[in-house]
Image (cartoon, rainbow, N blue to C red; front, side, top):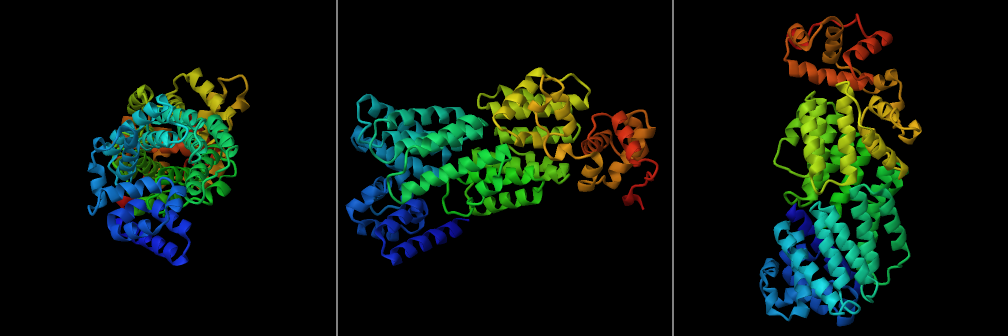
Length: 513
């Protein structure tokens, strides 16, 4: 992966130099700064020094990046991380913190990035207190500090820092800081599941035309495209056109986790798990994935969800059985537990998820929907609070989360609200059982379990009859319930009788012959 990114970066710089366009050279240096500093330092230094000061000034933060690299002298770029910010005046330390922050993020060192983000936020607040915001980069730096929090999955802190950045940007004259803060804020809001807030932030961003040329315009536009795509996927509304500009192959693209979430989630909602898995594979082969980051959390969770969608619960369980602690992965483990018939584990996971301080309203709703699934399967009472949250989500145009639970769960929730149509049914949940079975036919083992369910009184008897464990029977029953759109053995037998599925399946396992 590192050699691939290095080659792409070198080629981009060579193409820009050959064009003779100084702004294009500055754009290439800024976009590919870390790979160039790390693997092509001499080329970076020569190109940087060849640019007129006026061109470098138009391409902030290239000026700060380049100057700090020059301060490091002949040492390689990783020593930027070791540069002591106390060697410069306090008012100049912000640039040091920013470059160290960016270098640490692009190197995948999120521990160092977190330290730099905290220092950068403190520096920006101090600059605001001293009235130094108007002609300085404090707003831009605060937004970068918030973006670091977002990349770590700490969305609440990110939203607060983007708000602070926007406040600072109101009096700033440099770098289109307010639009930058609004675009990043939209991204944080949609990751949190607040569709209305994300759309509002994007609308406000459009009121601030980008003034700086080339690089900043590209960064802002890419951030807003990622936010717009995630909104479209969440609403399941013309997602294809919003997803079309996204790619996972750009070198050193810090927005790739958000693009991956949009592309893979859309594929899963369209019942195309192989496509979702392909997006994840591309990201894994071309991008750096820091441990315990939003990126690593998304990659694990999406792989689990893809395997579950392919009716491979054992593969999904193996993927989820790691040390990833992110909330997305915890939700994926909850889905594995339900599909495996271990609904008590699903309930324990839900308790942990909703008590996490980083659990967004979006995450809490998804956890509650999964819990409602478990409750329906156990014939337990559903929570009216879950129905209320589902209604609020739908009122914002939300639809994707409803594609992840069976139609009979949504029908049960619709029975708890005054207006059932306030909780929409996804396209797949409105199919007849016969139509659904054409898409996902019963496996031979599921048909054997179905026959056993019609003749056996207990799980233990079914396990003996089928010569498998009780847990295997529970897993196959859960898959059977999902495909038949029911929540109990009695309903499964009734549906199967109605569809003519009983009386035609021998209790013989093909592996036994």
